Image (cartoon, rainbow, N blue to C red; front, side, top):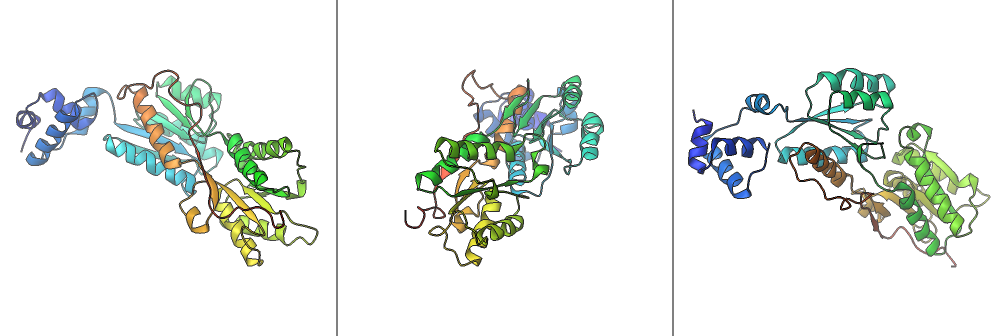
Length: 340
């Protein structure tokens, strides 16, 4: 059986370089890394991560805490983070709080403390002072994704301005009868995403001197089915209907488009729809949206963790944007209102 010394000899590097190259713990030139990996492959050598962890004091395991894994956004964040960690030779331990306080308490009071983790990434969870204290007490680097936390590295999009931008697009087309479909109160826990997007919508209308119709402020559960029922009822109202709709997620926008079509309305000539997310099915629906790239957000969170762990050069002061970049994507679900 080949040893680490055999790999070092074949690659023409030191044993220490082999250990750093195979574990990902430390800086190694790309040429040396390629030579080490090639030599290890030829010799059938696999680094003992248990031995490496004992030597470095690292478990090479990152914990990720999120309220669910069933939603599109969270699944994409998880996929992006996992792929980035795999590239660096790290494992990921996932903690799903299921949106329940008792599960969340178990994660922060027991599981995170018991599990050997090098660092923690939280997703859309506004950590309480006790939760932050628990993580700081065990000196675990922390990155929060989805909202601003005091004294914590954060990655977030500007939900207020995203929503304002989508609304401004509809106003620029000539729409003045515009509805909003956001999330129910249960989704306002933690960073209050639905409220921030509603605020952006109302701000854009106010700037254009357009009155907000309270009857056109709808709430659903961020699912296509839930949005379908809400929008079908809205558009069936005999006392007038809006000509456009801003949805707080793409999945709800899909339900809105299907409801309009089932009622015989043409999208966008009779009814325009804008979403927020950048869902891969948006192209199929022709959905105009603001893409927030959750896969890339997951990758960025891992890179930030690597900076905190000293495995990647830190981003220069002022180089990191305050908000994660988003992208306005124009498709065919929006047009000027009929007769404009």
